[in-house]
Structures are given as structure tokens and as C-alpha cells.
Length: 411
Image 1 (cartoon, rainbow, N blue to C red):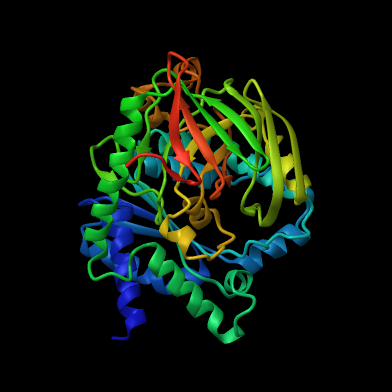
Image 2 (cartoon, rainbow, N blue to C red):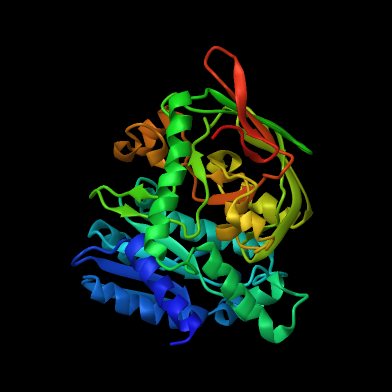
């Protein structure tokens, strides 16, 4: 067996055993592009070998998706199939796990009318609102992994020979998800433990606010009284661990919806809706986004903010050291799954219910009362750099360093 095939087998095993952590007699739903076929076939095999009752694979094709956005009538983008939403929600209610295998080009929908993208994002978000709530309160196990496509590899490695680009992206992905080590499953367990040390420290400190400073950034984020920092692995309502993102290098929590003030500048391009948004800044007053500016993709960014009322606010605060393995690889992936794990980031939109004490058992109204944001969307954007400092402000108003020069200020 070639080294590549060995790594692909290990990747599939990692996605099944650590990513969704499939359980005996559980259904697995896999959403994938056609480029993921080789990995998905292995995932299906591993899932059944590890006790899955049924594996449902939903295939998508980027060329078909692009063609639809170019040629379909406008009204189509206001619709999401009712039967598909009902199937997704019913499977979740019956304990299914969800695995996404992504590979789309960051420029897939470049040149498409922004309102078409925005309308479909809103339609799908509305139809799947209940499923998103299940996901964000750990009612279901879910995970996201990635495979290269030619278009994505061309974007990441434009200076390399065309025939080498996909192989280089595979290599970068394998390294980022720790597939290149002897025992990836054990390596992930150790990584999870390391991130939990940071989580425990921050939860013990219980900062009232975080103050971010960097070139183009002066931002204060207030945290809810009952906020919880979490990192790496999650635990669903049945008590089973899962790893929502592979890779992941972050520890994160929720901001107080109305407690964000100042301006933050992006440090990496954001791939959203098949377009790139780059060199942008976002200004907040009492939590609400009052201004956005972007050198590239400004109209797409404005459409994102206008998705609904909740998309005018933040839903996530995440800390990632600049010296994280993905950052040190010096590969700009143009893909949030990877780039957010090379940089401190924030998310526009909905909050994760599990980031507040008792949140997994709260309804939308109670979550809102505790300062959490609700939205049809959740989009991470990268703000970290080696020049970023973050101070934690305690209840008595004193402050202490959390980040200095892009790295943890404590061990």
C-alpha cells in the first residue's frame, strides 16, 4: 500500500473514530463533493466496521452548483427543499451523526450576483434552523474534514507546477489533521488534553472582558456572566465525545451580544459564499456592527451582515496562538476550516449554547436572556497576527495579559 493510501485510510479512521465518534447502531450522514469520493468510500467502510447502522451519503458537484447560480431563475434561490430539511431534522432527532467532507474552490461563485448567494444562504438557514440549534447545543455529533480539489489547490499553490498542486494540498491537509504521525487517534487525544489546559485556566480566571489591540484593531469584548471556554473535543447529550472541526487549534467562548465595542481588522482572506473577502474591517457599537469596509468582496460582506438581525452581532470569540502548527506551515488555505486554526478569530452570527453554563438545556429565549446571539448564520473571520495583544479584564477592573505578540501570555 502506498504512503498516500495508508494516510487516506488513517484519515478515514480518524474522521469516523474521533471526528463523529460513531456509535453502535447509529446512523451517519455524510455530505460531500464528488472530489471526496475516495475518502468517503473509506469512511463508509470504516463506519460500518465500527458499528454504524446506516450510512447516508449526499453528493454535490461544484460545476452543477455553479451552473445553477448562473442560469436558474431568481426565485429558486429563495427556496430550500422542504423534504430535505425535514429529513435532516428527523435524522437528528433519531440520533444521527453528521460528517461534512468539503473541497470547494474559494472562488466557486465569483462573479455571481451577491443577492443570489445571500437569498439562498437565508433560505437554507431558515429551513435548517432547528437542525442548527441541535448542532449548536450538542444535541448531535458532527464533524468537518476536507479533501483537495484541483480548483482549490490551484488557489493555494499558484506558484507550483500544475501537476504538483493537488499533492501538495493533500500533504498540507494530512499534516494539519495529524494523519502523518504513527497513531493519529492517540495524537488527537493528547492534543485535546493540551487545549483543555488553556480552557481550564481561562475558566478559572472568568474574565469580564477581553481587550484586543493590533494594527487596525482596538476592540473590547464583554463576556456573559456564565460564559464557558471550550476547546477541541465536545460531548453530545448522550455523553459521547466528538471533534467538530478537524483540524482544530482553538479555544473559544461566546461574547455578550451587546458588549462589543471598537474596530477589528482582518488578517487573512475570508472565503464565504464562493467568494473571497479580503483586507476588511468591522466596527461595533454596543455589540451591533455599524460599519464594514473591504478592499475585496465588500458587497458580499455587507450581504452577510444583512442576513438577519442576529448577523449584525457576534456569536463566537476564539483564541489561537500565532505559532499554531497551521500558522507555522505558512500555507494560506483560503478555507476557514484551516485558516481559523492559524489565527485568533471571531464569528458573525449565532452563538453556541454549550458555551454558557446550562446552555445545552436552554431554549432560545433563555439563551437570549443570558446574552447569547441567535442568527441564521455563523461565519468565522480571522483577526490574529504576531502583533496582537489581548488583555483579560477582571470583575474589579484590573487587567492581565492573555496574549502577547500573538501567543499565549501564560503557560
